[in-house]
Image (cartoon, rainbow, N blue to C red; front, side, top):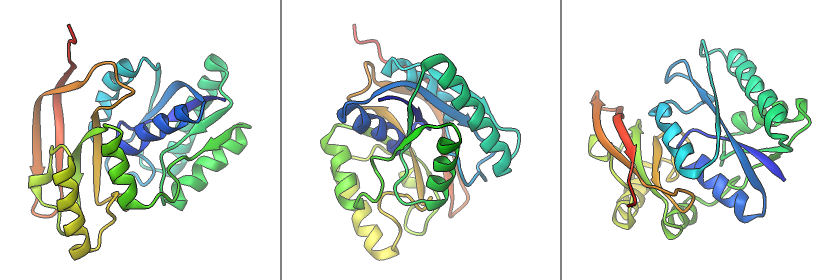
Length: 229
């Protein structure tokens, strides 16, 4: 099936593309909505502008829309615009999305797919958190933590690449502080810097961090794709 992917640059939307391709689908275009602010309940906010480098590395074209408010109706309208363009230009038959637990997200995306007579593919839906996080490492997904907003996660996690040791630490903290290990509750957000879909690794050249004692953000200021030569 020819698919478009709802793409934020994080581990879940990227891994959903990976799984969709393993299932035999083709992912022909990325759909990226730039949220108005980090208060959006539907969209992923940090470092979204650098998804263009991920798109380039995956050799998958990208369609982008910018929302003009956090109003869900505005986000829905802009997403519908993207899907209409994807249908016209890429003849897509369905949408792949990386949701795991959020009924709110899935219901909204299902409704918009139904309206556009498209199938929805959700390969991560209800994945068990511990096995999923291990699976990401086993499949050579490299990603950083771009935001934290949970007890137990301090500023030392911002910009950190999650490897086996990092996952072991997260599991211990999760048991103590009871957050979602896969961050589906918004405890943290991520950004993929390398994976099997990429032809070139993404190199972060400059960044800044913000931390208020509970919530924090790692913001990429400059990045490029590594020259493999």
